Length: 154
Length: 142
Image (cartoon, each protein chain N blue to C red):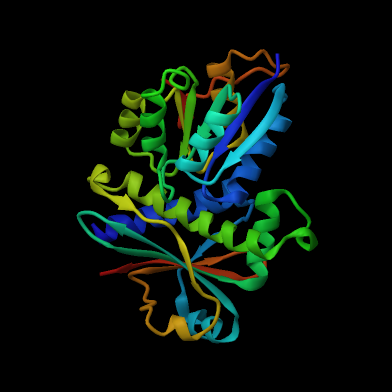
């Protein structure tokens, strides 16, 4: 099931980010840039828990500058008009949609429940616990930067 | 005739996005009302005249399925059409929504056209462009 979820996760990322946030994305197969990216950026960390035949959390790591961009895109605003509360709300909604998409497509979809997304942090410290490996993390390239989406299984 | 719309979602940005889409779709909306969960929505419904509810499912305090269950028990509210707008798109959730009385279901992520089509189907609204026939749509009335 893990592999199936990761396959669907890739579809979900493109579907959600391109449809709702007007953010062209490309999945990065070569993860060699990941560590540098993690250490050099101020990242927002969002998570949403899910329970079912397998349980864990979906997570989203997105650079602060991109948070502003996708919020502006989502709301149809100029980036200068975006307010801080709108940024948190938008990234939570983005992960909620990605996670919800995965759980609606996976085998035994009816047995899964998704929780409420939350901002885990926006610094480096909270990232230490996450295991970011190719088998559970999808690195995504956008026009100007990268973001990461993954599944942190219990 | 203008109709009043209540948008129920714990994400204020999602409420704004849905409101903008409805506005630009050409519907004649009198008032937009908003609620952050099912409990707040019931307060609005008891207080104000609402013609249509668009509601998320996954919300704190009272979720969207509980909301339509409560509305179905109330003589004054049970005839108000409710469209679910949710990421939870499994067949069981859609069927459960239908069984509880939902008039339609829009799956997130959605295109602006999905909202327009669902509202046209449910409210019978004649708009200039009219809805499109999209066989791949994840959206519609029941």
